[in-house]
Length: 192
Image 1: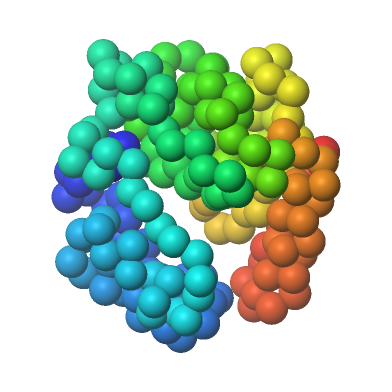
Image 2: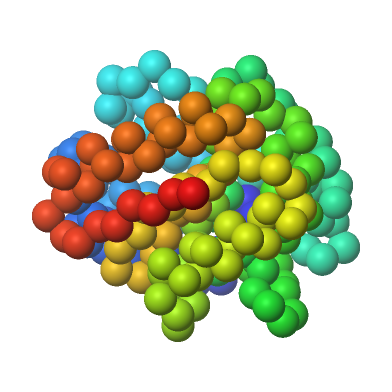
């Protein structure tokens, strides 16, 4: 787990705020109620899906002292989605803390994964237009590593997706566009 459960309002967003299948909404309500991250490994079975969820170091919280070792041995599966939920998102312009993922850490992960893999990073609203924030995040990422970037955002959060492959990020954009069509709330999709 990247950061400890501090019993704050983090993670307490109502699952009903997001349009999804009933079984996923109910699953998210259960996650929120029990606040047990290990439950996430049950999601494929609950939805009749064939993917596997693996937690990376679920009993270790990231600190500024263990950041390098925390990210250095993430398993590089052939084709995977690596989801990072660092509470706040990417490092801001100024100081960073354990609630941020650093651009250099993303570079290390991208070096390990296949062209068919995706890294998705949760980004909380930073009091600036999401379109502008996406461009700033993308530009900073490109300073560290060549990659292709897309995002989906609504309300107060954004998921920024990265891949080494333009084709793979194109598939992500298509999936995001399809989700946008079924979403009743205002959703936005942006890419390179």
